[in-house]
Length: 267
Image (tube, rainbow, N blue to C red; front, side):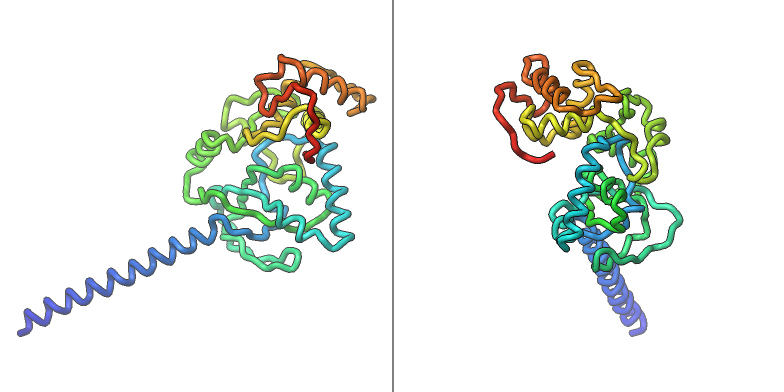
């Protein structure tokens, strides 16, 4: 009858609609999974820092290493081993972008705010040497969050370092966000961060995965040694820092060893 036909029609329509919605949802989830963890080449100019400063001496040393890799034709291989972890921030009105980097074509997901949460020195060095793009790995997609929720998440995950180049803590999250440069090329110099890198290279402390461990050492070193504008990071200064790093006063810092053993790993 007409009523039975109409009833079966509604059932079929509901089933088809459910299948379509399920397919769309699974596609969206697949796309989300593809974005998470995969390496994508991103323009260096689109990378945004999550800290205000870095060690320029350490960054320039890395830039020299990059230039050597370029001459040997091994830059892409080198960078792929050091994919930059990023969190995708809230989107703006910029349309999706396509670009090519080091022979690899990829698409930016319509969101230019790629907040890097590690390898700031590498990203800065790439900007210094004029390398156009870098491999990035998305660890979290927060592009659908509000600006407030995004920065709260970044703070809770210890993905930001809210300190100035002279070690002053910025307690207000909005103030820190306003002070952040929009480009990794514009990061300020913190010489104590370079000293901390040299200190670890000389065996002052072990590599530690505590967030911003070298910055923690840098802030502590400010009260132990004084970097003169003319002296710079001399061998004497590093030796003095090494002496302090082996004392019990540094035992609260990540990677503390205090035993005089040498750590030959690179910063």
